[in-house]
Image 1 (cartoon, rainbow, N blue to C red):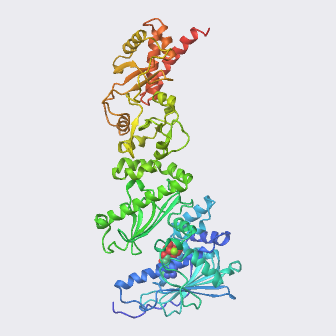
Image 2: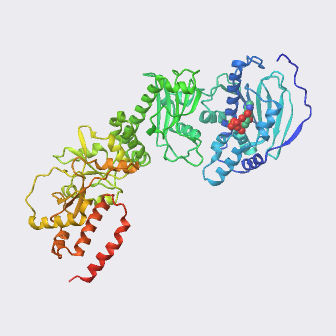
Image 3: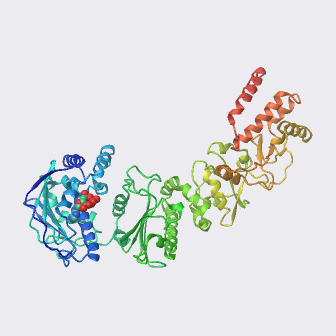
Length: 625
Ligand code: ADP
Ligand code: MG
């Protein structure tokens, strides 16, 4: 439009009322004693930076801009005696309508959320007030009176001034201002006079606003006080762990320290800056800012995707952070980004680094790694199941409980180091839960030999085993397999039931159990337990059977082999009962059911109750001698 007449003058000063929730928020900010009041400066600087970003963007297409040559910058001045702090930017500015809306009458759901968060939590949420979209008002933690004067970039707009003291109303009136941008003048509360000291402001800027992308000038200084680079583009050696943590907190609103940060700055094989975090907890907190999984993807410092899921494999979806690459073309849509080979290369570099840093953490800080494993173990197991190419990198990160150390976690490397001199494979057992698995008859032999067996009791373990067949040169073997362990034949033990009599017993079992078992035979491997169920050769292995079960798939359950322990006293006593007696059949049924139960295969354990009552009854009718 070529109409360059200025807007009609609105002479009148106007007094307007803040929105209800803003009034409450102001009341709280003014009267609470926040520790971190200094963050108001970060909020004002962040608004100035937003306004500068917007004018830069506007100038790409819009030529009718006031002061097109003005330097994009922020100037801060103080008057200590008057307790005055003034921030001025050359950003996009605000018109009268905009200032009324933005700083007073817009409905602020964030205000309510902020108040809820501060009420229900011990955390000092003033630190992150900006994340609730009401950062501007944090100035009332330190201000007695605030005046905002602004001149929009639109050439016809007139300057406007906004004044508030934190009461229920604010005043808007025409103002004198010839240059584009916004000036915020703060009369500080007497107890906030420190914020009119340049050295103090400098300190705060270094702490919270060093990475603002526009120069911030303090007083008469010719050099900006801030670094102007984003944190992830800043060399590691210039950063402290506090800075990393603060960045993480701001990005996620998670107040728990992250378990690990991973900072990558590299040029090969792709140009890449990345700053990744592993949160302290797998569960996202109530106030988390991150609504979805995925990393923030920047290209040359400009955000192009808030939740990018293509930069890491799915099993690492708990990782938070930003990725920034100069190599990404800026003008491509999100969809085409996903399909470029560059994304694949970025993903590879990021994945490798995450796994490498986790391995380093395991070596340097085993306790912290345990914490990590506790939270994220199932994710890595899922990785083994889903990404065969990464099994080798993931294997050293896995942790297991074992029959010999059921309370602590061990790595496959530690297991290998503790193996028996003649042991050639890694043994494992799959079960339902950490307690019952220790009762498994499959452990009998290993327990007696002092041989270590990995105990796998999570549903995801069965899936993991589909991808984990070997660690280094060592094969993994399930001890529930009938042919394990390969044991030299020994002479029958003294207490064993003689072979002939035992044969009668086996037949009796077969007769009672019928089709339910494929075979009943003597075991060479049981010592403590009466019986165990094993699979016939060639059957689907136990973890696959479980996978089928979890996936709800139909499969023909194999007719298992019931193995009996010829040296067990219970079987000796059973033989002494009247052949074909009802009690003998009851005991046989119960032995079978118990074997199913420890195997985690019993379809309906409560069905055993009537039988157990009968057995108790029988025991009481023949009291102990
Ligand atoms: P947020 O920055 O999250 O939007 P704030 O409470 O910090 O919330 O700011 C409210 C709004 O006021 C901003 O969205 C912006 O439109 C306007 N605003 C604040 N400061 C400035 C400024 N320096 N220049 C231009 N607009 C501003
Ligand atoms: Mg803001």
